[in-house]
Length: 215
Image (cartoon, rainbow, N blue to C red; front, side, top):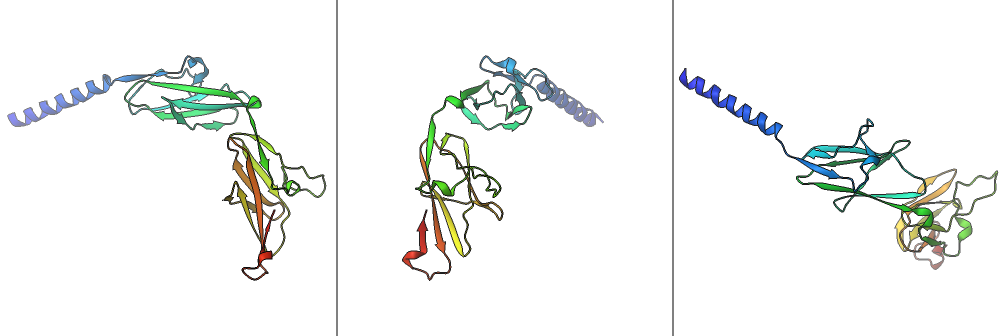
């Protein structure tokens, strides 16, 4: 009986200590780089300024301007938040065992440097929107800012022909739609690029010099 009472006392003490530890778990600060008023929780409450280690932090930056690029950093480590239309950027991270600083760098992309696409002399072959026989084709854009998504349409598709598309010598895998042709997409780097199409006539014997046509 005495032994049972001792076990119960030990368990009670353990539970009390665990409870006390939970209540006194250390929290760490979240510094919003002087812009705390721009952040909220998903349910539109003020963003938390403290969190416990291991806690999931979820905040929202809802004041998003057009023609602006947003880059987020947590203690200089880049974050990749989701963007939710009509709501803004949803930022999530697990709180480490120290104070952190959340920074947001904004860049007006309308003032950013433009880089050029060289279509290897075949500018007419690429369009900036799907081909429509009922309207005038819209030529592909030649200039983009770094980080912009480039989407090119290549409707000049022949039968018995394989197509390889290269961006700065690196092959890219295009999508294909019967009514549209090839759709080439990539992210514009921070330099000019060259886009090239190599056509291979599958009806000609292997090794023929006329087999490859560069566009």
